[in-house]
Amino acid sequence: MRRLLAKGIFTGVLSGIFLGLFLKMIEISTGIKVYTLLLNVDYFPILKNYHFPELIEFGFHLIISVILAVSLLFIMKKYRWNRTQVFIRTLFLTFSIGVLLYPTTALSVRTPELTSLPAIFIWLLGHLLYGLLLSSLFIKRGILTELGIKGF
Image 1 (cartoon, rainbow, N blue to C red):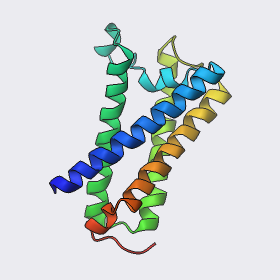
Image 2: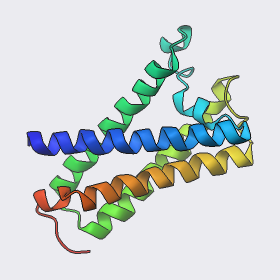
Image 3: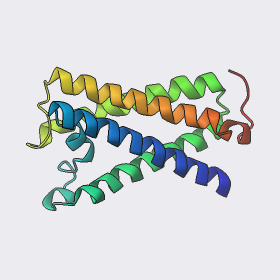
Image 4: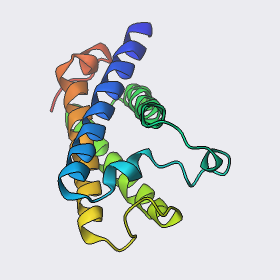
């Protein structure tokens, strides 16, 4: 169980770093504040009163990514998802999270406009790529084998 937890933490951190770097590169190159949105905590009642350094905000993002990855591993184990289910459901979940979180941009003056189509597209693409990497790491790192999951 510890080994599985460690692998979940690793995949969550690696995938979370990827998403952060992807969105930061897009923001640097286009000026569209999608990385700022990723790190935004303005919609949390207590946290919105503080200005955190970027590294701390990125740490919050990685914590969420690790919680998601570890939770997915436990769900996969409980419901015995096959490889195809891991891939499709992880993509669906990460895309859905992107859809659910995007409206928080309306709660901050630092993030893109709610109606910014380029921001929406990049945001959702980033979350799909995040899910693709996360599911690929689950499949390629032997985590599914440890869970007793076979087949595609």
